[in-house]
Length: 126
Image 1: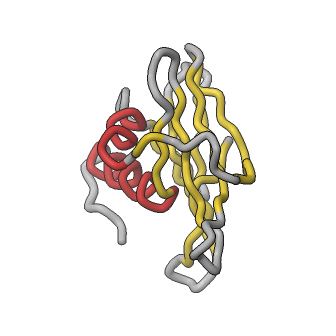
Image 2 (image 1 turned 120 degrees about the horizontal axis):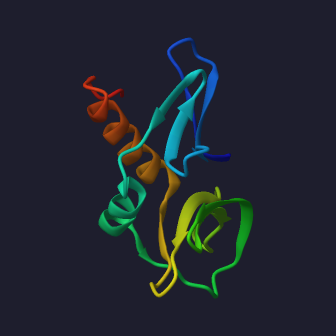
């Protein structure tokens, strides 16, 4: 399981959003007791839409890695650019034969949350 986002929930407490791989190999989004299996290729589509090539020379601190199977993986990294005051969290998607893609973790998480909500017929959460 890989934590990809943390937010303040309706009660004012912190709520974490996780990604995990199910026993069947599908990717699932988990927030508290709410676990939703994502549509096939949801992560790839979101990373293609919002991601950019990953700079392997960037100074990062790896927060965690989630093996996705078939040689694919997702890393949660933290980067503090010279002009930033607070480090930012990014997700780096790596697949064989493809250039690694990187995007802000909050944007990827929100995109996946939206797909999960739409997939189960619900309205998107804020």
